Image (cartoon, rainbow, N blue to C red; front, side, top):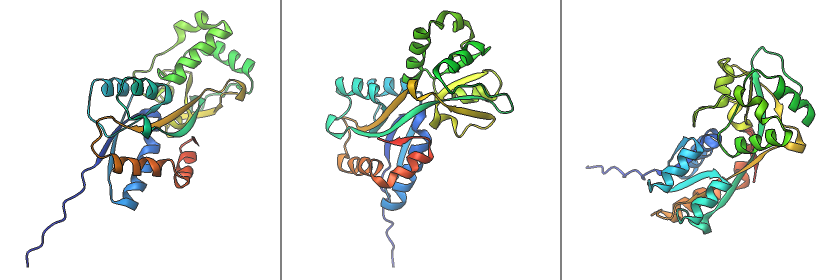
Length: 236
């Protein structure tokens, strides 16, 4: 008897920033197990991800910080009716494992820690932009500018800290918790915490809208909440 193999369902494809890489890996694996639909998400620097979507590279869905999503939507690259907030992500501070942890318990303490650090680094994404504004508001931007080490897009700040290239690193907690060789000092003080909301949406050229919408519904469902918290984020 001749057996005909069932053709496999083509994967859904997406692009995201590095901040949601681990979360999306966990959620898409869970979704594949329950639905049989595989999802391939490429995670790169957020700026590069947005540029690739703007350039017309073909994806089914995009997951980026809300400000980047708004720009892509305004330019017609995303379907507005599919926009799905996923998580809120805060910034944490890290030092190399085995080195003393500075006091960051208050805004003033953190300012002193920044001034005392011989080198520091932060994300090139929206949280880094907000941090740079904070340093300007504190009046220390000029004093520390020569100590700032810029991480290349897609390179975790935590990896620079782990190598000893940076004494004090700032990045979203979700990007720090999986880096070996660092100690997470804690989140920014609540009065100055920088929170980024990451959202997902299908692209305007998506040819499988029903399938992508089912994935978006799952990623925004209560079932996904535990994974989001495990990855250092809060459900949106």
